[in-house]
Length: 202
Length: 190
Image 1 (cartoon, chains in turn brown, orange):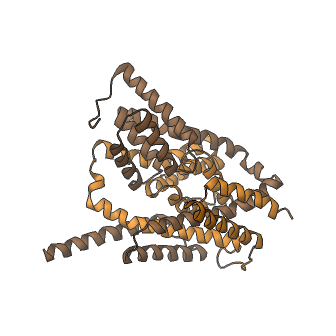
Image 2 (cartoon, chains in turn orange, cyan):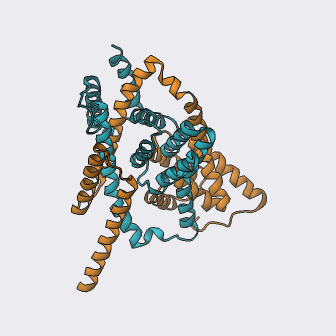
Image 3 (cartoon, rainbow over the protein chains, first blue to last red):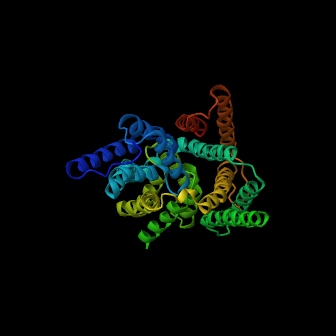
């Protein structure tokens, strides 16, 4: 199935939309631990069971989801929804993947403050907060291992890390957004310089 | 006005978070702390809840922050904000810009963003570590090491090392959260 058929009209299209809604509702309700856990489930559902896309197309989609901003689950839902049923498909799939989270978290938010005032819960959360430090540190180290250790990458990484740490300890206000925009610009400038040098050499 | 602030701040988180999962924690932390929406301790408690409930972490965080500040409508606007950039960008890529990912400039931009995200996550871990383990959050106030927190952190790290030796992968997140909840109840009971 290299080329997608045009989305069917009438009942066929309605069935497709319901199918997307059901699949993504299930995926939104059953994936724990964020994006990467979801990718395995998506593959099983759409490549394995429903055969709406082949493996190659699926891997392309994952590559796009990883290199565009935003939650990977949302990127994937929008992409799969659109490629199977156009803009409505994208809308239905994206809404469906958010609905379980939204309902569960909204209910939790109503009681969370009171829940934390129960003594044994408060004690448990003293431990859990330590675990969050551990989780973020270990996620950071894992990404550090996967990063290409070129001079430029290490400079950017250490530069961002030290600046952020110093600013946050000295309460200097500097939006996190700037780090991303500055580093992205460094990437673009570096590439442009390389091209110019390459052009002159050739 | 709280509603536009929630929507716009989470729109920015949605537009600038790369690398999934923990990539956006630094951005969300910046947004909620700078507005005083949550304290660091509340934020960290909720990160654990967002990790242990189903669904994308960013959506969970947005819904919670929105609901805690401005009820159901706040939750809806924050969630819409965090989802919208991803939705629009993917629609563009899937419909007209099929080759966006093949453009040199896109890849050049991403090549600079990747190390940045690693640095941001490590800095966030260090800042949270200093405040949780040493009660240190900047100039004001002395460093007060919390023996129980440091001990628990050491236990978690030892479990991780052991698990990696045994199974060649990091231990499941939910197991570590449950373990620290249990040890938290024991250690902080005195």
